[in-house]
Length: 230
Image 1: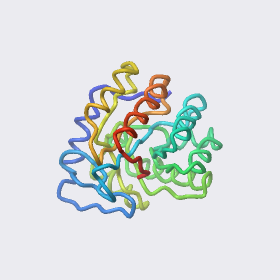
Image 2 (image 1 turned 90 degrees about the vertical axis):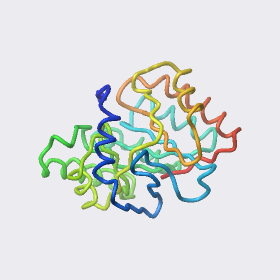
Image 3 (image 1 turned 60 degrees about the vertical axis):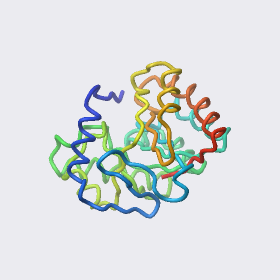
């Protein structure tokens, strides 16, 4: 239902970074260490901390499978949820939260917010935060713009609602369904302390993501990495 726009994410991320390169954004749970390059973890022991993030859910097929893998390995993640999906599957959003994961804002209907008027952007963001709070009892603190597409206007509106904008440092491209081996290789060959990994539990067939996830967690735990919630 939710489709991504091939080839636009990197360009849009760079555009965003240009807008905020001279800002200093601090968050009690999360800090941005290098806005010019990528967004990475800077709290705690960065040398061994990494964050798994999942976009576009909750999804009735794949979110439960992702949660099962996380629970099996004792790992927590950050889920950037689409508001209308939370409304449709509130039990899954609540399960994410109750299992110790963070449930955060990914807009109401996964639109490119940069082409929308301010009042619609506000509705997309505020409605999602309200839905998540009503479902989980916890107000989101983080916002990830759909497609990574953002600008100063979107960033400022997100901040109006107390949200810190978050992107990633490793994009698995799992939405393209490149194969389990490719998803695993993308992470294992690039990973370093402080990385934020972008994956998806919704928006399409995520069977490869689920299969890759167990392999990724197992190997990274053997390497001594710790998984944190943003």
